[in-house]
Image (cartoon, rainbow, N blue to C red; front, side, top):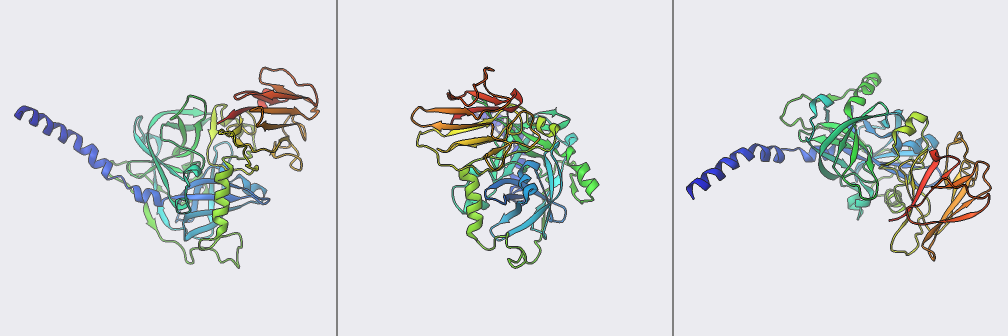
Length: 417
């Protein structure tokens, strides 16, 4: 018994440093560095995502796809807590890197973290993904609570010249643009993608900080660089500017107090699902979103009057302008094409082969199937097997079936989830 006790004591001493490190993780400061982003579109609907504070508390780093509605005149609001929210404008963005820097109308407060480059990151290192996944918002209070998931660095790779980390820390709709921290409280990456494929889980991606820092340098934005030590390098608290929020007389787009607008905007984004009408500005930008990735963090606006099937009909973008988007369908027909006056799912104007009103898709509750209709398109609507539909005809597609517009570069998949 004495010998057993001796070995237990030795084992405890070996494990003690790891336990101490885990207890020393500056979680609260990391949470204070993370903000929620709401991009309210001009003609209704919202996109949601997350971001991380930098500069003097007056700059926010996020993903480009989170704030794309600003290109169409949308309004960006950054939220740190119930009482701390500010409007923002886009200072810099890159579709190729899927990164953006926002300029706040003041200092939002919270904490400014240090950034750790890839030479300070090791495989299997513990990391924490922080952000605001929409499906986790079960109450008004939870809208302002940073959600935390824990994982490891699974691998590092390069996609279309973009350096990224693979991680098994769970990320979901709304996490995009949020920070990926190490145990010292340093930001190692910006969360932006996850694999969404039947039978696959625990595979997410974050953009390495190495892709961001040169952009901050060129913009002249000050930031904290990690000290490279093992000791916690916790985010540093910054005070908010006064007043905490823009006066309604100065900017009527900014909610004050606990305005119903905030709950309505975020609530709609959650209920209607992660739907970004993603119009990449360059072909290279589109290629980054590989066929099997699902972009997280954008909220869209098609009507969500889902039929009572027990499962929800969803249209998934497999390739092309909508790669990675999960469009939750309702009982109404969804029109697809280039004309924003006729279509709910609008392709970029320069989309080769896609008609102004190319086709429609709807879910038939009675048949438990999707009905695809070609609208006399010039370049054709095709089934997943390459069979071209007759002009003006309709076809039934089952769960998991695919179709494409003009070419396989514009592929979609239908599912019941």
